[in-house]
Image 1: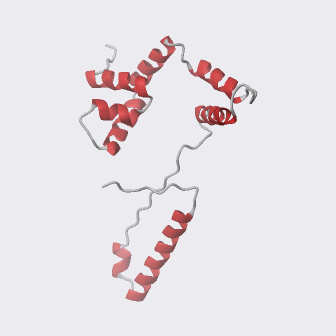
Image 2: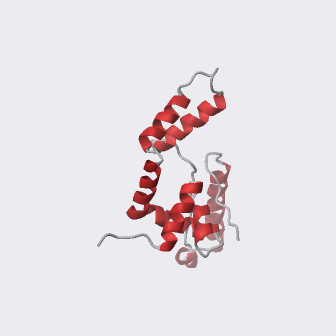
Image 3: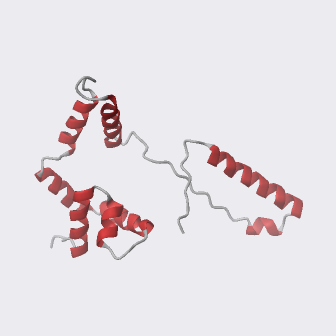
Length: 154
């Protein structure tokens, strides 16, 4: 028996086709107000083959296949500036790179470290030195403008 979408999955798919934003779609459909939970739900939903297939079929019905979108973006990216402004050309090139998975949307790093076992065996001076070293490393990572800091919204 073929797998079918649940009511929430159908609603999610419908919202996703309107907005192209998984997190916003999950916030609309599922019982959550937390964007992080909605992002996790969206990611899980979009990784399910049946939902991906449903989205692809709906887009295909509207003649929005990867090939047609790529052709449209390629046209915009290679157009003459007299017809299309430079900002549009840049955005088209970025979208084309995203389609090819060659453009990083965002970079984020997570750093977790447990020192509880080490700290018991260290002197106060050694512990202080270790913490200063970790703080310096974290500061240098935050100063790196290619890394977007993760902020806690709680």
